[in-house]
Image 1 (cartoon, rainbow, N blue to C red):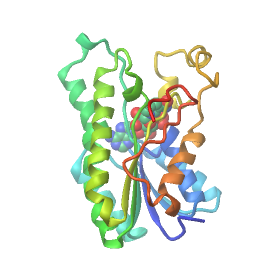
Image 2: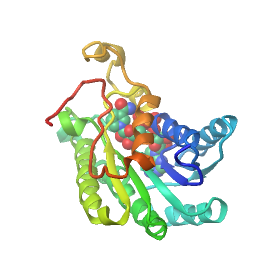
Image 3: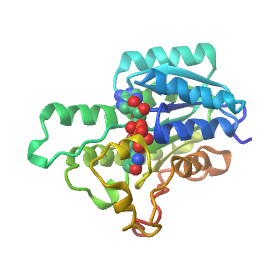
Length: 248
Ligand code: NAD
């Protein structure tokens, strides 16, 4: 297994895509710290990992705040060891016509979706540098490729995460640490189910005529976290069923 002996952190690992990523990285051999605001969700993910014969640690963490992140890293060091894989997945969404977006809502969106990955990455990068090896995978969104109505705050936060990923990829390129992006496009998760979108009706308009599964997204994350993806950085693997193909 390609990640044997490695320690991974998955933020927002208590649900949906984050859960699937944590379970998959554990199947790949990593020990996985599952960080989430929702402790029950995080523990549920670790239960699945352990049922599959892997090892995990559930932690309640608000990934938008410095102090809980530091505490969580200290605990991972004490219980699991040095971290070398990070999946910045924790995120919130919102569907609000532009003129109704409040300053507070805008600030929280930026805090969770953009400042969070900055804070978490800054807390974990010293481990990767010490090990001269690291894989950072940032979960962005297909909405930065297509735009999305009533989501200016969300799309701006995810577009910021794309810029962050590319800038950091270059800064770390010589150090054996890669930074890549996986934008999900219509993956059936609790977040999608809670949105105002009619999932099945929208899926019928897509090339594959179905939403994706969290496991299909986790497969891309697993590849980008692997040894074999060592020459890939600053790149995007879009997991969207052909919904957006972009330019070469
Ligand atoms: P989800 O709501 O099922 O899971 C998100 C998890 O993040 C939840 O467990 C939540 O508690 C956690 N979380 C939220 N804020 C947090 C914080 N401050 N600290 C720690 N944990 C926090 O959603 P999902 O669909 O699995 O989304 C995962 C990621 O994928 C998000 O970043 C989302 O924006 C992105 N995404 C999803 C889709 C999709 O089709 N599902 C599309 C585009 C982007």
